[in-house]
Length: 548
Image 1 (cartoon, one colour):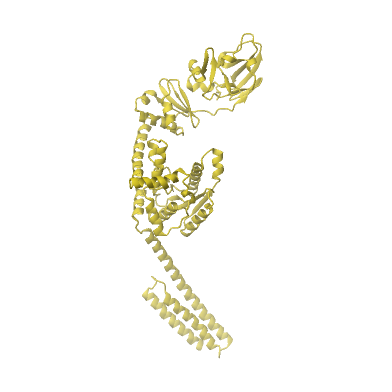
Image 2 (image 1 turned 90 degrees about the vertical axis):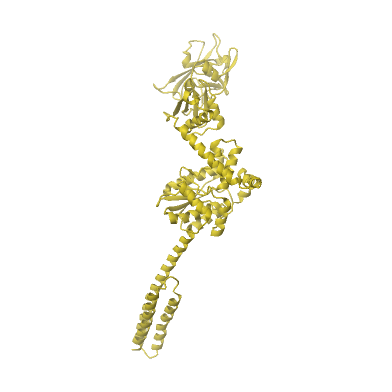
């Protein structure tokens, strides 16, 4: 009876408490009073069971205790569930309010992103490149807030160059922050120093190449349509000054483009001081790159010494330099579009432009046309290389980087991709195969003279070392009857156009050209009457095949 009375008392108190909580709807703040009351009511049954145990038997005591415990646990679980729901709802509210907090510089960055269509569509994926430094961590924070309002999905990518003792620290920082903000992260790394040695590149160029290669691969893995980097106004001004010091044209003086393929730069018009203020006010963690203070790097010296001096002379010049770059970039893009309309599509790894079309334009357009022709074959020409192509006369040729060649004929200029040249081969008596042709080398006592356009005949007495056949490299001279002449001039005298010259390999003796098959033999190596000769005959292995 006493147990029933205790249960009735506890149920009445719990019902009254529940009715009050539902009526007042006090779930907009932590239900501290209700939780305290629950603890008190939970303790009462045990106290009651203890009192009852003085004159009740064991079975009745256990039954009462189990009943009070079950009711208390059920009620506690219900309150905890409501409490956790309140915590989650208010956390999301706080995060959205923080994302909507107004920072004038960040609002301008938002507008900049929309103006240049940098943001993915709703549901799309953006990949943010994060080094762990101040700028990239600010960009990651900015894009995370932006993703909450714009509806795209954000991913992060970190590349460890393993060039600094603190590189592991920076990677750990990025991992912790991404875990805290629930941002999926892709990490990678490589031996930048070894790659630079193997490819003859500087550490800076090697790091940039490997980093962007990793970002492209990471973007493909996660399906990102945009890759965001943290370049800002000062970075753009430094780039313009570096290009100016190197003598760049409009393309280089245009600085860093806001959008290039998948790469977007949301902070390109944001000042570093605004980024610093954003980081400080938001409490964004970051790591300091100790190499940023090393003035042995040209860019660091510009940032730490030159730009501050320029700001003293002309306050605000950094932003104006970046602004001027934007103007030049627009002009360059317009000129490129105008020239692209004049260029034909490449055919069979070559681009051909009528000379009348080329010479009928002013110098600025002619240069862009030549660069555009090479660009269609995947090669960027320097200013000196471009002017060299324009200076070609009729039948002139010029080998260019990237395995391409420019040659000029009477009525057209052609830039083509050269087929890969076979490796040099040391000749011996008998039959050999090289570059798609059969070579026959034989000695004779001044016997038959094979056709001049299929062989070269040399004095055997003068061949005192290893005779090598190789593709002509566009250089060298040979002796003639009254002096010497460049091989290029000899080709021209024989009427062989530039686009056919790779079909005539050269013979070298200790690195010196002594003959060009089918064209000429060095005067000093020509056999005299009755002298023992060395004959090199070249023949096609298959009909229609070519030497190179």
